[in-house]
Length: 82
Image (cartoon, rainbow, N blue to C red):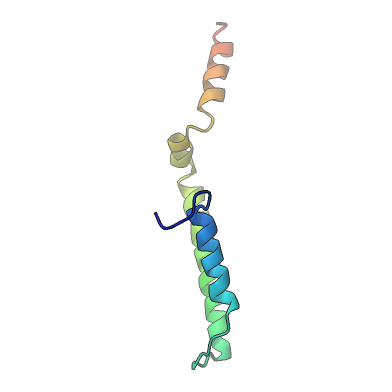
């Protein structure tokens, strides 16, 4: 609607984020040194949780994405002599 033809929403979003992070702005906040370690701890915990969930539900993920189904059916055909 508001974008020119050929300008995708993703490129407009990237441009908006770049402008947001590049332009100077004043911040009246104080972050103590413990805040950085808390952020790192949250990121690490999130990554480990995601890795655990992928490992735990890998079979269901493969079924959902149909990964390995074609190779399995080809192997079944070769084993039966078809």
